[in-house]
Length: 421
Image (tube, rainbow, N blue to C red):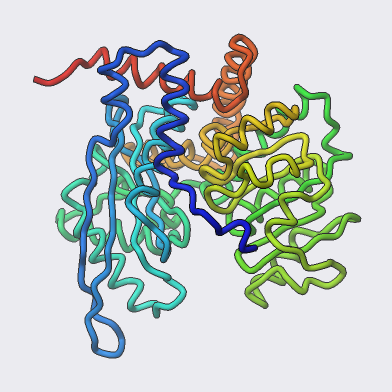
């Protein structure tokens, strides 16, 4: 990442609130309701000790935030990253509220995080940290209250430890307390690919709307983790040419095309996509400005900003990551005619299949991958159509259309329930 991209950090929580304010203003929401929806319902900060392999005890800081519970229990991932902050977790929790509402699943928004670089922990230390953190936040979580899931640097194995920890305290197995679990422990078929698959369903709809032939499309993917690498493979399957990809170490480009499977194998072997044979090394900043038809930011927040939005050459920006585009950049892209598929719609496939997993767990049921993907396709395409209709009706960009849809649904639920007591 260049120094240009890390200068003047952007506060994700302020971005999330501004996005909400814009929709609330257009919807002419009641001022009291605005004040309720503008803040999280609950914020929990925990400082917890972990036995390290060298015999020392380290204290880590973690968070769990519930933004809104009007439409159902809180839902949202837990991330392990050295740069996690409470404001970031609050923003992600709010985005989860809108994301669940956009696709019409009966959840509110939650999010969690631990300030840690998990790459520096042994497996034993990682397990100890995970179990202790989940015990600390268990005052909030539960299958009817708050259902965590994987996020940045958390895995099905970590979800299994979470589930086991909660179950040991309960005295019986509670598979519905987390989603994103291994299949053997009540995980759902298709969950691993769900975020990317949902994103690609929306890209296909956007391309059809714009008259863009995906078989001739050049695709660039920022972030080559779970969502990004699978999105690259699925876009290749749609006939697209993957011309550039990147991860946290930097990126690679070959305008004639990259084989996403071979790039993934290279990354697994070398820990980076850089150095891949037959490609040129580029920076993450250069990837965002690559000549392409579809740009898929699948990394972190605040990647497309006022500094580089006018250099984005893609016709479609599909936000597989949460919050990769700032409000100022949104306006620039919209003015330039770039079609944005906003995060709360584009990457909602993950939480949708998490919902499917939760339903299967509560019913002690198991669906086939074909069933899961078919149900996901129906939900994503319906949500895309609703957001597109609102954006055209109000002559606004797709993000504002998605917010108008989501905020109205959450506001209706909150208002209908009333204030207790």
